[in-house]
Length: 394
Image 1 (cartoon, helix red, strand yellow):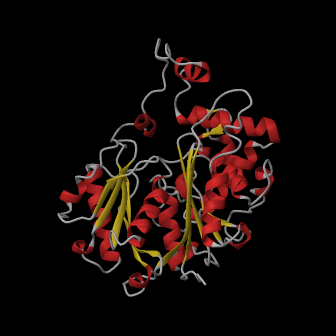
Image 2: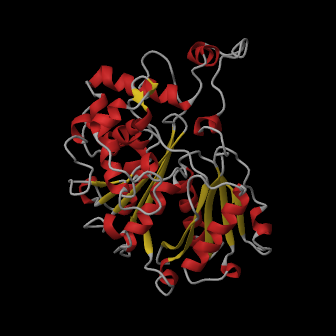
Image 3: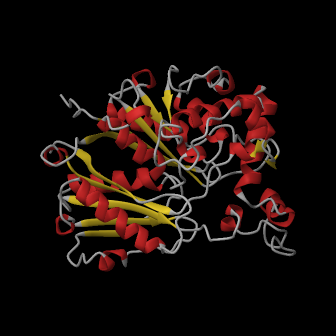
């Protein structure tokens, strides 16, 4: 067995795509990914599905696609870590001889005409009595209304600022760098150049997070096709080889003495994936990191070992992550500027970069591409190590 590789990629239209169900978008993405690989739908014998806010794509997608003879079929949900988990599961099924060709797909359609994007997340309003049987910080979160991701990630960012001196301007450097990449991405929802001053002038969402610290909300779907590496080499697209993967999960502990918000499961998931791949952070050419918030990028860089704990603010400053910087990071603009498809946003861009198909945003070197997925409030993490080259396993 020569390992697994991503052989096909399918992306639908992204952003304000109305009049389509998540299932319809998911089916389109799978068809596009299969065609991209030069395969037919009947070549699929595995299907892994996931959905975001609406949670309305399920295993019935197989029937929608006319796939009536699948060896592997499952609905997977590790929140934003799902993409990495799916690819690892597909690779494991292929290595075990259970399946030969597995499509992994994510779709969501929370945006509605004439509604604000924030409406997709519902209300974080106080619900009297809801915390009657909860204890400690869990009860405080519900009864205070501090239940939505914006508020909880703001707590994490503020804690990092208080502990290490990280600044809002340093978070702005991340948003500005990613927008500079997005300018050259035809799929990106936000393509106008951004400055630190514009970031700082954007309205507050939850102190210390501005609007431009927060990810987009998007309708759309992304799919990839995973197969054996030797087979992928014979198909229509350059194969993107899977060198390593890892995951780690640590449900948040909001109590005195915990390191919640400062150290995340990325600290275990990243090193595990790199050990499997036989690489270290110094070998990484491109980092496609989950960026639901600017802070998520900063803390992931620390936990992966690109810099020391507490040094993320200085590390991301002065164009470090921008085109021409020392680390090509979120080269499509990420979820802050491109589109929000959970972990399939960094995964899709990683495939594009590893194939050398980034056009004006193509990174100069792509021998090793690191992909992260983050779920919950810094609670779930997956990591993939991808490469255009087959790994030397000797």
